[in-house]
Image 1: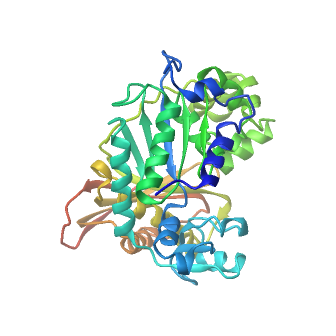
Image 2 (image 1 turned 30 degrees about the horizontal axis):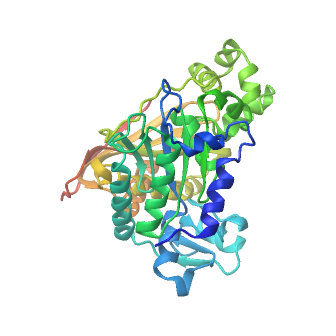
Length: 401
């Protein structure tokens, strides 16, 4: 399958999208000498474009090609797991209640998920990545970090390897991927988003400080809506503002996290790519812009979180294999950062969104409903296993942390 002309244009545009500040020069893009920053790491972040939705459009072009589709459950109780790019301009996004998505996008088509198909495509893509390196850290079925500083084949050029990976994915699956190349995981991941969909953005080590300076503060690792608002209160709107703010000021306002934010702003991110790391737990959480007081509303807000956890469990094992967990924990945080955790241990390991929601509902009610409004809700699963087990619930343990 040959790559369409517009995909090549998208890649060229993305390569130069940081306007001379952080894009590869033509000679470097050619990569013939392989002399890209010999002392620097070459980290790739590869992210499939609207993965679930794109597979449905590929497999059923007569029904879905060019149409706004949402993979997930139907209204009123369903949740969007993935949205096609045709649906996104209308505000449709993953983890959104289906009833809200349906209201925002007239003509939106809801498609039931086919997880077995998505998992198989993920395995095919993982095989392509392994042609170039075994230092791969999968983040989900459709996303991974790669360290190609010392690749298995080809020149040590992050740009060339990223291009070849994207081309091979398209030729062998008919799906497009976006990629970012940089000297760190943080820079590579943010760079990927600059070229989506179907783009490649390359940030050289000597250009990363300028690139980081131009980022909105909400793009930084670990900065959610609440922290972003607090940053803005002290005049920090961008990476440049963060670079100019002293670490002492940041630590005084944000504690240890302030030091982390400062290091990222200065291009100091030495986190390694961890191949097939053994996960001890899988979870997801969300911070809200306002307090949530009613348990019924809390349960509703937990549904997309449970969906994300379930999706991550389906690829959290070695080589992206599915796992289940025997311990579930519900995290509640108030607006003044008081945190409580409620935990249950099971005989039967679980993975499905339905099982996680039943556990979340039980944890939310026992030993009693939350007495204080919450600003953050989280759900995690630990004691992971790849085996399918039988049995009933063992006990409920509640820890206050």
